[in-house]
Image (cartoon, rainbow, N blue to C red; front, side, top):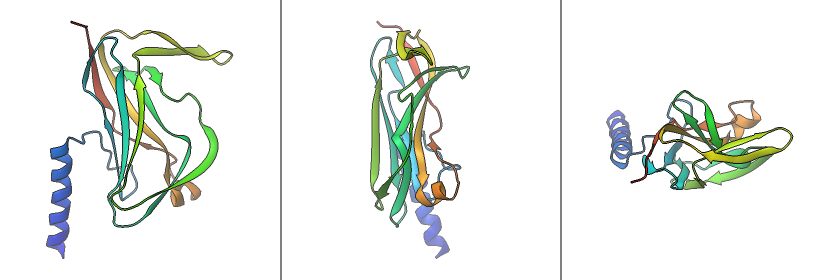
Amino acid sequence: MKRLRFFLAGLLVGFVALTGLVGCVTNSNPQGLLLWLEMPSEVSAGETVPLTLKIKNISARLIVLGHAHPAYNFIITRSDGTEVWRWATGILDILLAKSVAPGEELSFMAEWDQRELQGDERHGPVEGDLVTPGTYWVHGIFHGNLLEKVYGGGAEELKTKPKRLVIKLSD
């Protein structure tokens, strides 16, 4: 039985290595969920950046997620940690539930037009100027967790490891 477990664990590690799921977080996510970002690693200045946050149930059981609305967010930061953009600027304080079957994968998508998000409390967020070419970091966030953890006062969001995005000068 131990050999089978090691074999299956090795298969999972090999799958992650071969498919390039390098944005996965394993230490802070609940058991049975795989969370990662899919996006280009390099784009030209001014090019729209497609962003996809994926969550997969890698367990053999049904998982019920409790989440806010919207369920997800993307945050772009500079290398020094300064936030330049976020997809969702507000979260409703409601709890929704989503069942995820074994092997099922959820996808959440957005696009970033490479503009900084600016604004204030009075006028709300507005799009600013295009960011300058350079290195940025993309963070994927799921505003929820296993339903029993949300009700039990556990962590209320799951995060990917930041993924590097290079914006280069247009040719």
